[in-house]
Amino acid sequence: MFFLSAVIFFPLLGGLALLFFPRERVGAIRVTALGLALVELLLVLALALAYLQNEVSLFSSSFLHESWTWFPNIGINYSLGMDGISLVLVSLTALLTTVCIGASFRIEQKVKNYMAFMLLFESGMLGVFLASNLFLFYIFWELMLIPAYFLLGTWGGERRIYAALKFVLYTSVGSFLMLVGIIAIGYYHQLASGCGYTLELSQLLNNSATCRGVLDGNIQLWLLLAFAAAFAVKVPLVPFHSWLPDAYSEAPAPVSALLAGAMSKTGVYGFLRLCIPLFPQAIQTLAPYVNVLAVVGILYCAVLALVQTDIKRLLGYSSISHLGVIMLGLFSFNAQGVTGSVLQMVNHGITTGALFLIAGFLELRTGTRRLREYGGLAGRIPWLAVVMFIAALSSLGLPGLNSFTGEFLSLLGAFRSNVTLGVLGTLVVVPAAWYMLRFFISVMWGTPASEGHVSVALRKGTLRDISLGEFWVIIPLIVLIFYIGVQPAFLTGIIDPSVANAMQVLSSAFAK
Image (cartoon, rainbow, N blue to C red; front, side, top):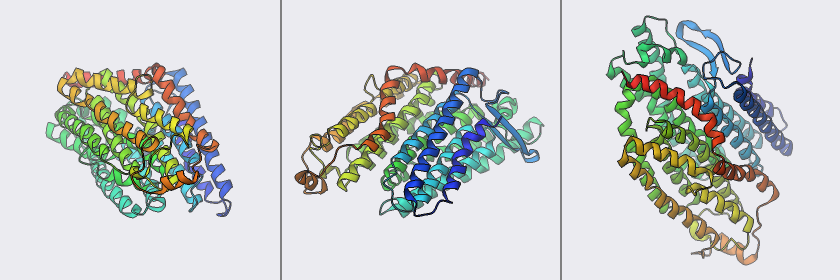
């Protein structure tokens, strides 16, 4: 069966097909791109139904695992696999891509190229979540970065070239180190086990030479650092984060939503899928430092969000802060923390994606992202104000909305691992409530501090409320904010078996 391959390559082939459309048929290009994204979302939903019926693991011999030999002498094979963790992240990526393409209908410049890059971006991210050969993982990792660079560098704001180059420099260094680590782990696996050279994740995990500490501790630590360099940039962890506010603020709002909502999860996924199970002894050495960086990121970036005057930079720093909570839960190494971390990856993608799209709606109406030029919009755009209020409450973790359960489980896991880190991580609720409420009140209820675009629009009465097209774009995310808030068991039921498998690997490794 080729179900996983179809899910990965359908957007890629669809994006290539768009390039054959006449450039002047802008409407047809937009509708076709949205149609392709919707078909891909339906494919992913079919994949989810198949998984729920079979309940297979990442490397089980079912149609949810694909493997073809490419270059066996150097360990490179075409291998795909899926478990519950992969499934929820693949579903998130497909949903956000559909929503973001729907929100991109006002893009006027090089529409054909833009839509093709959006679909290629989706294909790369899906490949990262489904690859089970390390070299194939690296191929999709690099494929993902190419459209991200062009989407930022071509359709971004005034400082788009600076932001795109900064993004490429940070990610390229990390990617190169990961490639070195991939080559080295195959070599050391062969050297220590006496088996052939392999980069198959299943074989590396099953071989005691690699995952049970036969390798020298220093070697394992260096290999871990090589992989962690790529993933820490993508999360991002402080101090590898400075590319993110520039990239998110300069990119078009739908691209920012996709970068923050889906691409940032590839870094956390890399830590969970590769670093923790492959290097269990080294990860225990590194974990305290990662936890400290996560706590620093949570508090430091929350404070930075408080003082931002640009809406998208505020949301960028908020995103880093909340991703710190996800990393804190992941590195708690207990079932509650890891389950909460995965659940919060999905919640963060939904909420942050919605907030960036709303920021785009506001900028489209006003021509500005400067908070001091906003104020008193709730009476003119009441429905958009309601949508924004829901997304803001979700971001600060209000009970009954989606983010509460994920953050609660992540912080509970952190408490069980280290009380001090748990307390420090929990402090995020104070600045998060402050900057999110400040954001909402400044835009919807405050008074403009200057005679900017918003105040002019208000005087002339030219502001329009959320349109029907914008409503259909944002409503799936709003529905999920409420549904996951009251029914998180639907997702945790999918995630828990895969987390239990990961905990078994860690338990046996930590016991050595």
